[in-house]
Image (tube, rainbow, N blue to C red):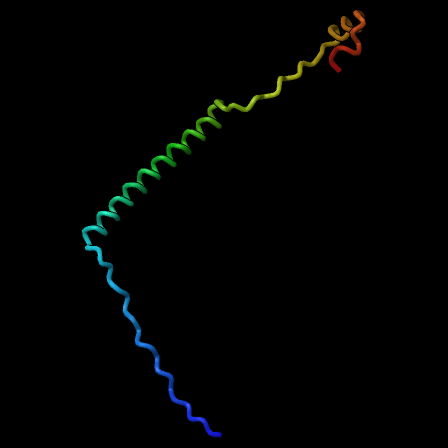
Length: 90
């Protein structure tokens, strides 16, 4: 039982096929992509500036909780004397 091993033949390497489109079409597509990329970058930059202006410029739509006014001793005395102890501020 002797088996002869033969060297396996490698399939011929295929070279990459050339695109069927002429170079002028490809360069036009590249130019269009560059223009669209520039446009997108400008839009992103503009959006970042608007967000920064909104956050830093105080134009935020977040509502601030109302500031709690501290009750003075005379206001407390007046409230207690009226009988509004449980209805007033704590």
